[in-house]
Image 1: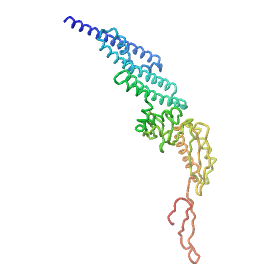
Image 2: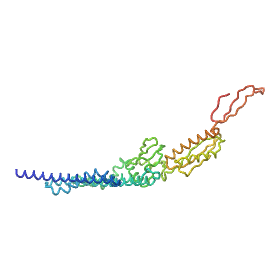
Image 3: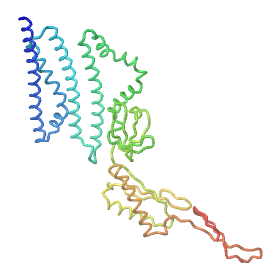
Image 4: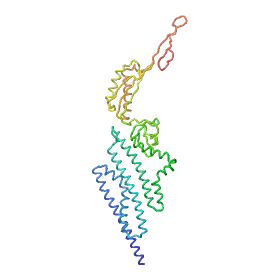
Amino acid sequence: MHIGMIDWRRDLWAAGILASAIVIALVVHFILFFILKRLANRKGDVVIKSLVRHSQGPSLWILPLLALLVALPTAPLPQRLSTILEHIVGLGLIASIAWLVILFSQILSDILTARYRVDVPDNLTARRIQTQFQMIHRIIVVLVVIVTLSVMLMTIPAIKHIGVSLLASAGLAGLVVGMAMKPTLSSLIAGIQIALTQPIRLEDVVIVQGEFGWIEEIGTTYVVVRLWDLRRLIVPLSYFIEQPFQNWTRTSANLLGYVYLNVDYTLPVDEVRKELRRICESTKLWQGNVCELQASDSTEHTVQLRALIDARNSDDAWNLKCLIREKLIQFLQEKYPGSLPRARGELKAEVNAEGRNDSPSTDATITGAAQPNKM
């Protein structure tokens, strides 16, 4: 009875020590993040804000685990139970350290996002850096998860060989699983290639499979292309390594736009050229370098005029093209309505056998696009 009472008091004392350690860790966590949140709201520092946002969850596990690791040697527990608890706490700490590595990558991503913004006109460098780090971050997450699982399995004697195999036989695993996971592995390799060579970046303007859109997201195995009508085109990551596509903002966001007009031969081209210059100078959509009007082609019926202009990005280029097309059409309607495309006809009188024109009707031979009824 006396021994049972001692065991009961010892177990209660050990449980009290461990519970007190957990409570102290939670109190420290609350105070620490209370201070960090106040600093983040007061200073507006990107690092502190990112630290609070990403580390509040992981630290809620890490601090109690550290407290238990410190308190376990002082708790009067049986040797076997103490060993089991220490092993469980050790596994938790290994997972927490992996979580911290991923956390550091997330904080660095937030810092780069704040420093290199893509919502500015000249965002080529920002899109390049963000694309590279986004791909690197995903690769880091995959590697950290694999290494962490391997180390955790290696701490368990019964299945230690599984962890060693998982960590040391990446090449063998690649041979065994390679055929079954060929699309996934090729996408992962393509992600590394894209991070290094960067054929695409976030918010690049691309034409993929005949669809016009923007690179919205670059995932581990796929790319999301936001189309002009807000649909999303999901494309395998390896597509941008193996297949041709158009990238309008590969080296610069600046673009040349063009507008074609078919007009009559009688139109004075110099007047239209002056009107094009006036339209370009009246709008902020025009970048200010290229504003040209040329007769790019001619047929037996019309002359084709090409207005060539430049813009800072694809959105401005599209809106500027629409504006110039509307304004030039309005200009022709108001100033030179006779110079719009038209069909010319030649009237021929009908002559009877005696050489007299005894019929008021004539045939019309049309050189234009349409044939009218006989008069």
